[in-house]
Length: 436
Image 1 (cartoon, helix red, strand yellow):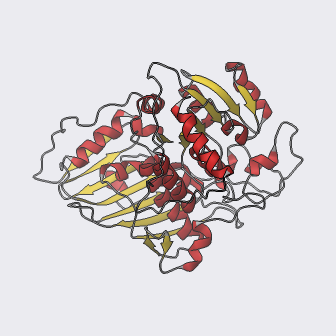
Image 2 (image 1 turned 90 degrees about the vertical axis):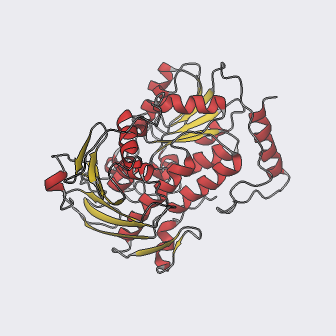
Image 3 (image 1 turned 30 degrees about the horizontal axis):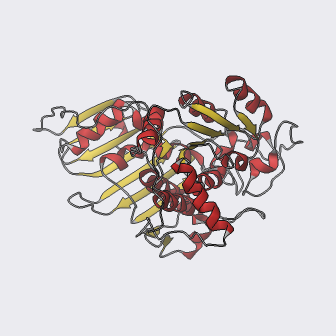
């Protein structure tokens, strides 16, 4: 019997026996009862289940299609049918739980909307599978932390869908910062020029017959069906997505988190304005100030996120016309970088020389995950790293939704010590019938 199945069997037998399998505290995330994973031969193909098969899901499905696609799942039977044409031997479902029931899986790929990341990811981890998940890792801060804890407990191989992380440009930018060429970096500006789409949830209609809307809604509040909050557009409604910060923060803030070894902030404060009305709509224009503590010999960092029309004052001098980018400010110079380019501005009297490469180029984002599963290695966007990144990103939305309240953050206790009202946004309430 394969070792992966043995671990799943252990968990299921413990559940049937009434044994409580509790969440492990963050300060000691790996418990003594963790069951180690033994890999199959690296020459064998992995058996993969894919939950969410269109849009980002189609890209992720394509990225892992070199392996055996055993199960496909989507609440839209039309989208599911198109994926089945490419993988006719796979089993097809509209319920993610049917995928997790497979005993022959090695890993699961989750590409659902944000509000449905948590349940299939946790179910897959608890069943003993390795997991790839689209960004952001979860819909709430608490969910991201819970995933991190279960990942550590299971010693699972994991990866977040921050595809740009695998690009050569990010690696060269990280090397510049970490080489000390810019001097000590204490200030970072991250801006994203996109805006949310303005819709109206009042435009409701009947649920199309090819849609399982109850499963699509999942733990979110049940609202009348509207195409304006459905496929793709869910990103711009709090019940289902996290706005542009949730959509792109894990991409652009990934670079400073990686280069400066950032984890949890000490304080978070947001401001902004919306382009339309209502409690469920995410903002068009937003600014979030994150302040991080010193890390070993690295100084504290003040990072600001800008979206929509908001820009740092430095944009005119250093922005180089880029609609979205990251600007590092160091004692000796500045670095401007985006997905595919970088530019260094040295202060007078300082010279720049490109450091020797120290970070190996990636095999490819999905290939990195596949190889890590086969060899029981780590990935650079594992759920511990990307979970902390996701928590930080989502704290900006918590502050915004509290009217711009400055959050004094206790990372160990997962709470804002100065604002009890934040708890309801840190951990959301689930619709009846959904619990963890």
